[in-house]
Image (cartoon, rainbow over all chains, first blue to last red; front, side, top):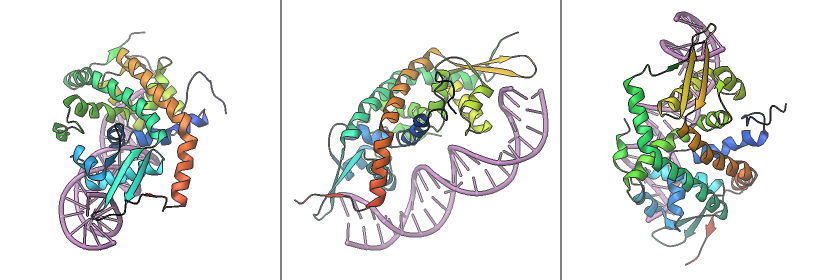
Length: 133
Length: 133
DNA sequence: CTGAATCCTTAGTGATACTG
DNA sequence: CAGTATCACTAAGGATTCAG
């Protein structure tokens, strides 16, 4: 079932479909922040927790596990007491970092514009363009 | 509401915090696919529905509304019967397209590697690196 | 054709308490 | 310090039905 190659349909190209799995990870609530933080080097669990201080301990754990499972983050446990665990990006995670930074740059650069668009949309909910034909 | 936005992330930079709002949109389940599809030009609702055949009608509507609200997509209604509605990217949506394509490229290029990492992780759940110190 | 409305199921998230 | 376990709640998403 090869559709028009010009249109990157979610189902036409197998890879495109599979990409959804990856996008799901990047698109979750905390991964982008965690990866970005790890972009400047290794961090301990508590450091990440403190940095993203509105993340719960549980969610940080869940997020890190997911990233580790996907081979984007390395988890290093130091057998000391109290426990000491460090996280860092794998080479693959590092390559994703560049892309995420690009996305983050775009986001930061367009926050205002989007916010304005939302206000306008919420203001006049009948803003729809109507073409006559 | 999303008042938690009062507190950002790692470096507590306001812009970084606000970027989360944008990332939430990009990170949702369908926006990337819809934007990518609209990247090659205007499409009707039914065309998008057909292209992403595992999306429900409701979710396509919800996604498009969100994108429209954020000023990324333009909705044009043709007053004919049966109804005909066309969607296309705004200039801002178009600028995001480039970034998303980069992300998509990365995703497609690393699906295999991630999948392998997941299998390995799921296989030996004790794969943790242990450093002695 | 496009989409709104409703119901319903489940995944995601937070709060809290407990452990090596 | 770095988790795990449990409970409860919410929001996301799907299925279905109705309507302009």
